[in-house]
Length: 256
Image 1 (cartoon, rainbow, N blue to C red):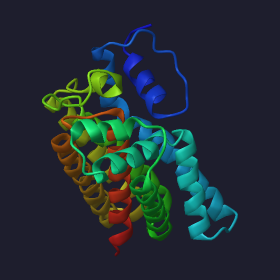
Image 2: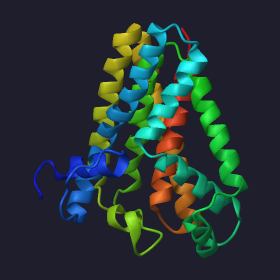
Image 3: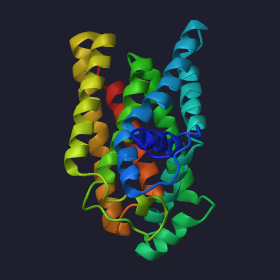
């Protein structure tokens, strides 16, 4: 069941709990899915934004509403990105060579590095979202930014760390111009969302947050490729969480 919509359907299926029919998946479909990945942020970020708006209507504390919003986003992804973050932390934290680190990442359990990383990232996300001037808009912008890391992580020249798995399917499928086009689209949309919620200042803050989030994810991508030899599904999931968290931090830190 291929066609123009196969890539976006695959993106939704891979990145959320929503099961859509995609049929046989080849690398062309995988490329389209990675290019469509930022759009999936509208689903998870939209759910978080809705929870925040409901929390405001119910007069919940900002911290409680933020915790519920982060939880809603995690549910919509089956916490797969968080799991990838924990696995990457365990693999890199082990200090072992690539083969040993990859073996650790493939285990089903989570070690101390993963536990501490998960706790810190979730605490930072909740606190940053609670303190962001326009929390609902921040949730949307950060979610889209996190998934913008995926076309960059899957661009040509970035290898897979393993011969099989999700990393092997999507690695190297996205041309650099495609990643650049996705970035331009996200920047334009984030600027518009920021302007709608906070005027010119909000637009500037949103643009900065996207760039900060993407830069943080790309720095981790560079480190992971150097240590592991390429990307895996866990690395991709971790990049989503790192980009999301850095964008939220930026939106919470910039005032005025």
